[in-house]
Figure 1 (cartoon, rainbow, N blue to C red):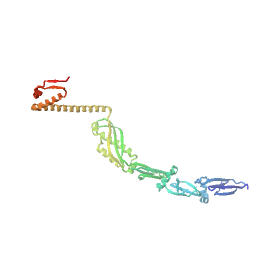
Figure 2 (cartoon, one colour):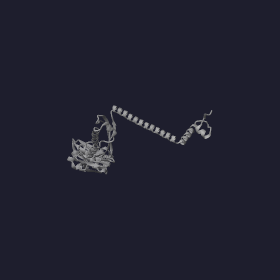
Figure 3 (cartoon, rainbow, N blue to C red):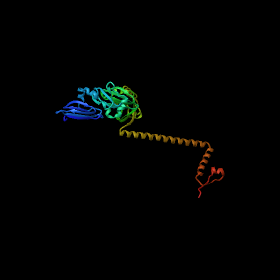
Figure 4 (cartoon, rainbow, N blue to C red):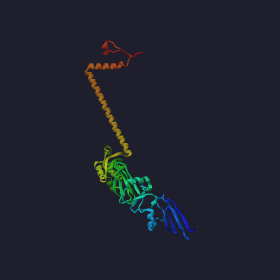
Amino acid sequence: MLFWKKVTVGDQERVLVTKNGRFVSILEPGEYRLWTGPTGNFEFEVHNLRDLVFSSNWADFLVAEKPESVERNFLVIETGDRQVAVVSINRKTNRVIGPGKRVLFWKASAKIDFDLIDAVENPRVPAGQLDALTRLGRESTVHVQVAFVDEAKVGLLVIDNRVVRTLGPGSYGFWAVAGAPRVEIVDLRRQPIEVTGQEILTKDKVSLRVNILADYQVVDPVKAKQSVKDFAEHLYHVLQIAVRQTLAKRTLEEVLSDRTDLDETVAAQVRADLADVGIRVGAISLKDIVPPGEVRAILNHVVAAEKQAQANVIRRREETAATRSLLNTAKLLEDNPILLRLKELETLEKVVEKVDRITVTNGLSGLLDELVTVKRGS
């Protein structure tokens, strides 16, 4: 009896038995008596079926040398270099097995299904699987490149550094197995771009600091991506060159008097160049023009002198008009005695408003001709 060993296997257990370093069997639930012999040396690996995956150094040996035991106890999932497997446990998505892997699941643990997918031929993750994998977290999405494209934007799917297709608004997932898939987002809305602090020399050798403002819109995102490395940076440099070409042909006075737009020929060339890379350029304007400090002081003096001269002209014009009005009034009174008398009465009315008492003799004639006493009340 000393050479027998009793082994009990629970309902949720399996026991891998080896003897002297050699595989013996996998024990299912029950009680066993094993003959050890005088030199026997059994070893036991106890596995709980709640751990769905068979983790043992014997896994590869069993697959290669004991296929009948593997068939009876395990579901083997193997993926090639361009494959992934989406595993479902009891009809619920559970995990993703990456390329070049072999995983053994205990058959008795649960109902296990899997989809073996060629990730190169079918790079996109089906929407239903993507939602399930996203809920499971990073462990299940480690082999998935997830991208979100907002409204008014477009996604460019790049595989092996090639633009494969465009993606409209929505959620997307791609198997990160081969070709390093990624999604680059391009905004299709009109956007401003500002080129600031450009030092430019005018035709009359005056150095100006200029800020340029323009707006642009991507109309062909694929062409924009394939034509230039960074279309916004490309537009920035094109605007720099265009402004230099424009202002170098103008004097300071011409720049300050017409500062809203570039030269029409230069602006047209900018729009044509950007249209070739799939970008529509709208208005282009010189937002700020800042001359050197000494030039600004001179310009301020010039403006002040111009305003003073304008004020003097207006004042003289008003004085001339007033004198002409007085002269016309005098001529009118000279030719019309009655009008002169009415004017005198109007003046007398204004005087009466400022005194308490006035004495008049000889009636109307005295009122008009012989007003002799004006007394202020005590």
